[in-house]
Image (tube, rainbow, N blue to C red; front, side, top):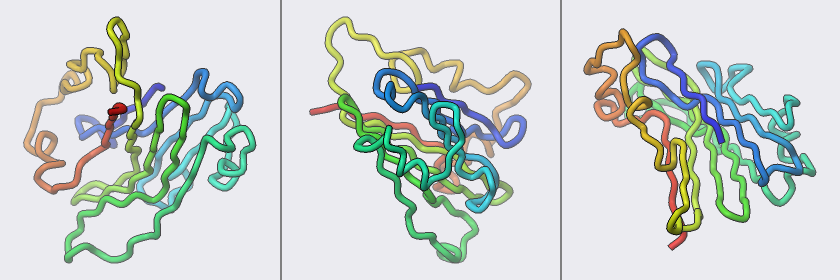
Length: 183
């Protein structure tokens, strides 16, 4: 799995915008590319899906015979209006769940609005991972790799209150990445 993180403008808060999935789990279908784009849920590129290099729609994804038994998709009911009169929103507008023999991946397409910013991004949760045995090594964003570079500000960008506290001050988190293992 490879994730692409982008900011909507220079020195702004970054979000997960694309996940590229490949490997033995997907040998029958080929690689999957899941992308969130645009500024609203009705943007043409709000939900971008590719299976083995071919762009497909949400309905085609759920009917793809190569993914039968692996994939479930859902579109939560749209929420209308403002919450408590605020202009802050974080709504999931599409979800896919991939059930593999060693883990379950849930990917949410999220529309996020805070004052001065509106965008779509992805959240990822991985569940059911086996406990790591001695000598096993898992890298990447959910593994043991060094995250110092990913957690650092880009060259030329100074930390500021908006970037440091945006998620906490508005109580609206950015992209969420999580993993849990079997108990």
